[in-house]
Length: 421
Image (cartoon, rainbow, N blue to C red; front, side, top):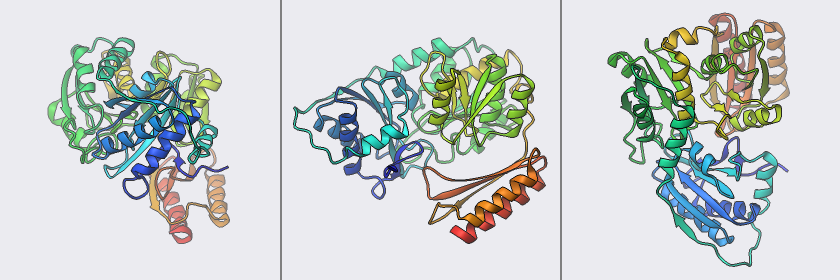
């Protein structure tokens, strides 16, 4: 059975259109029935629609006999760590402010499997005849989370000047405090959420302000989170972007792991470096939950995505932007981020996101993709995939030089527009 509401990362959509309070209430009810009642720990990011949808979700929990424990604004990884019988985050992650959504975690803090999500959808119209639950509110979750991350992932950062971009999201106030507690000099931006500015011109989806801040302030590096805190990207002292693949490259050598899990989007340079160092690479579909599933299946600790989901499962249960940023700072060992990232040669990549009305790839398009990949074998590749969260087809081409990558990307993108636009 295919999922109707769940996408790559929970249920998500434009508020009032694809995502309504009624839908979120039904989801809260169905998820509680699926988890067989108990306590549901709920956090949210800083979107203006968050409080209304949080209340709607809580109503659903209560109507199914569960107790909703509302923690207010809290990063997604904090909810995973603090999950009770179930954890829920009201967030649309890196999407613009008009979006919102719901992510769910089981009692172990793990994202739900496709099968579990299908089971929840099957309960959307189920009846419940038992006693109603109740709503509780807690105010200490932020402190508990911050203490855990600083203690388990922090190192002495004295002498380090770091620019921190909180995307006007859930890390506003939390992330800067963590770096300051560890002795760093901190320049903070994107930490004034007003309900309408999450991920707008700031954060991991738009690094331009952070780049300017790093170079103008003389910071040693900058880190940027997305609105709910499960992504992190970095900028070196020159203002150059260091993406998730490069961060993984630095961490897999620093942490001396024997296995790393990545998605099909990972740069070929990361694969080559891992091969040279004898590190086994496990490749998954796009989505950090698939990376998590692979790590648990293979007994690995480190994995992530080019987009900035970095997962390290020592003392954690999921990807965490702040934990990843602290690990990255610790890996520098007095050197620069530029020097550390240079260990991996990045293959040039050309990307294009194409808005479409139909995300099914026709046979003619698939044949052309196969032909190009055969021609590029060993020197590059073309990857075409439907977005799991938006009506888009994402095209990536990778080659030994940008000219060839751009040409391959342009060829496939034109075909996508012709066939699906």
